[in-house]
Length: 183
Image 1 (tube, one colour):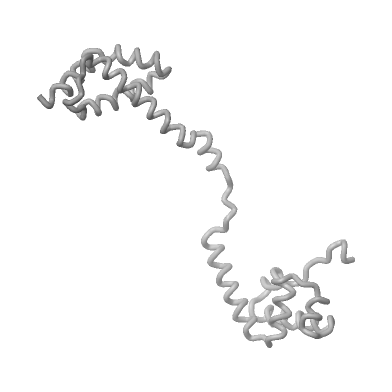
Image 2 (cartoon, one colour; image 1 turned 60 degrees about the vertical axis):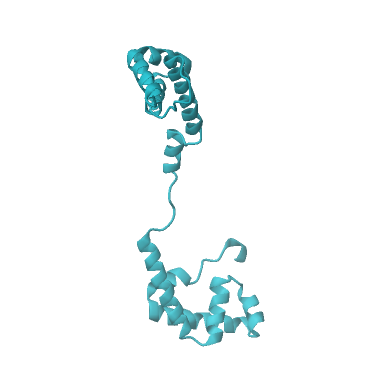
């Protein structure tokens, strides 16, 4: 007795498959969606409980397929469309690659080691000028020295870094071109 509903639904589906597809296509507006919904309905037919009374297997299949299609559409609305996915894929990834990141970490470690070899004031003057981007007069005031001493310290730091790290440090931390406002 437990197989009666499933058997009657399978028989109704095989007997009127194309008719159900046509009816569903008219209601749903898509033959593909109608066929997918009907396929899912067929898979669900085996799970129909015997406590449910199925008076008209064709109508039961049709209603179930409509509900399956509604669920599918609701679920598809939560997903990104092909155009949205394509737009996301076209966004350029400006992050540096793994080799660039590894090289930058090595350079930073070399810079920290070279800076660690300097006297504390010269190291702090360099950090204030190149990391904190302070102007020389502010650096002089912070350390209680004159501007000429700041320039002297920076020159010595750059010479030390150039000896230890090579020309790349001059490009990265060397003198910057003066802006039009400071001329």
